[in-house]
Image 1 (cartoon, rainbow, N blue to C red):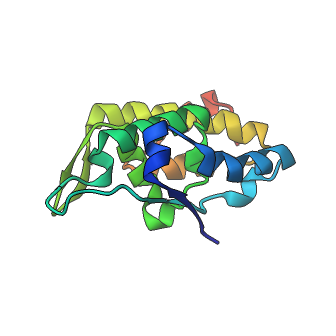
Image 2: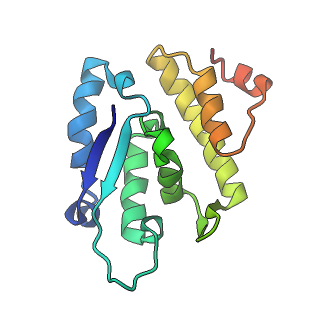
Length: 160
């Protein structure tokens, strides 16, 4: 099941997270957020001139909205639809990158390493709070970006 969250220009302009909070907060209160594992995608409506070559992740207003979103829900990558490419797109909103027409998103390697490590800490703690086994999930997220997390590192995080 895919859950699409539509982000309109006024949400971006006002840093309004309402389209997300109205869907996520009830699940958090019910303790049911885990039911949305890898199911969310964002439909971003941001009007551009026909000759604007930028990708959505290169638009400062869009990136700023996603930085705000990530500060509110830092564990959100758990809920993103990884299969459809939503996690790499979300990451592009937060990590410096270049877009290559042939090769796609090219993240800054150091920034990506910090992002993956940071999200590993966040997800391992949050998943423990949710009583969700996390070792394979955290490893899978890192592998999506080409990183292999060492078992010793995962043991330090005390994740299963």
